[in-house]
Amino acid sequence: MKTLYVSDLDGTLLRSDQKTSEYTNETINALVRDGMLFSYATARSWHTAHKVTDGLTAAFPLIVYNGAFIRDNASGKHLLEIMPKKASKANAILRLKELLGCDRLVVFGDGINDLDMFRIADEAYAVENAVPELKAAATAVIGSNDDDGVAKWLRANGMIAPAD
Image 1 (cartoon, helix red, strand yellow):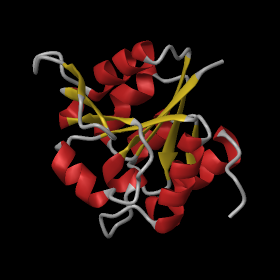
Image 2: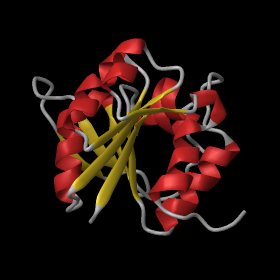
Image 3: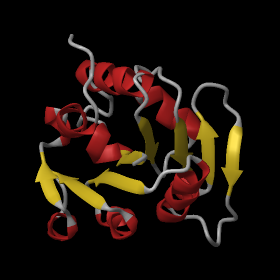
Image 4: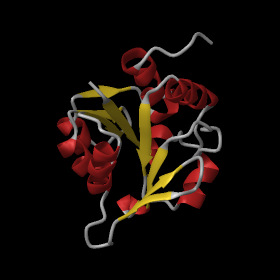
């Protein structure tokens, strides 16, 4: 079974200081190098998302502008542009899932704007700092963004990362 893992960025993968932690960077970089299919979905532009995730150096597709673009992290090549009327994180994730040939989807989020992602996912995890409505829709609640909740969940449940 081929699984795509997608995380929201602000309040989920990013800590409160608006950066990914060294632990998160090392975990995701190692897991992607080992074959995990990962992406993040954000309302941010590629440029602003790239600044706050500069430690994520592994090559993986990014969903930016609330799903209007799917962009390759390594080459800067646009993989898909969705017209604004249909642009959404959920639509972009479904298209990316199809492009990568995945049959399973696991998502992570913190805000009410992540409900659409949760509705299309096979499993949906809310970080501890998420809004109550998202926690209620989640498969389970994981550690907070400031506690590297997504990276810790991925390390424990996604794929085994190499020892530190």
